[in-house]
Length: 239
Ligand code: ATP
Image (cartoon, rainbow, N blue to C red; front, side):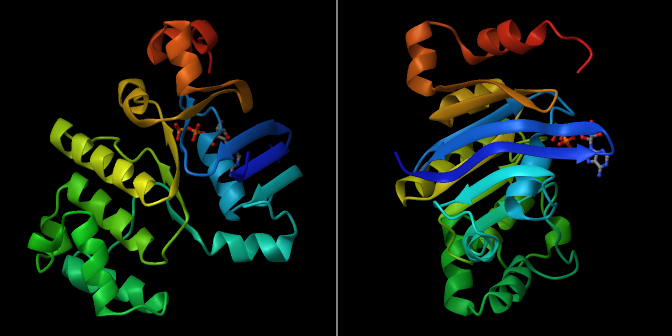
């Protein structure tokens, strides 16, 4: 099995507090991987370590099989990501915002047209971002992250705060990207939504991975994701 992302013993120590504690996660290429955990479990920390926003304390990170620091940075160039809320210039149109990101990646107008179409924003591309709903902003964020033609997409809570229609649209978009061969890593606590799209999961609790399984294994267990999560994680009320 080839992994887009693989961590071994990944640890982040914030002055004695282990936000990630020997995290082993394997994200198969072409999967939609759901990292699930309660607030403060360490999901964002994990994503920031993989993306290089934060330095690990110890452990190994492999992206597309590369572990050397210089090679890792090259691989990170092929990861699209949205951590927390995507930042845009509200007074500028969606098109102008995307064009700005395109230029940063050495891309042009054709690429902007392509990604806006991909996320279904071509009809509203001339509108200022300040008139955009949260769902439209999220789509614009994904569009911009696609400008670098990533083979991995890392999204932190992509459907948080969105209405059911926007959630369904984002789901369709992610499934579409998966068909294009993009590996998608999502952190979330919207279990019903994750269950609809994820192919692989890990539960995180207090900085540790407490369970890893595939969608098939979940199906074979006869449990739904919420029941399983509550069974494994739910008893611990102080997380
Ligand atoms: P949420 O779902 O709320 O986003 P999360 O699972 O993404 O939570 P993290 O943001 O990774 O959790 O935080 C994990 C823990 O690490 C939290 O207890 C947080 O307070 C702590 N933490 C995160 N960043 C720092 C930091 N820079 N310094 C000290 N502690 C931190």
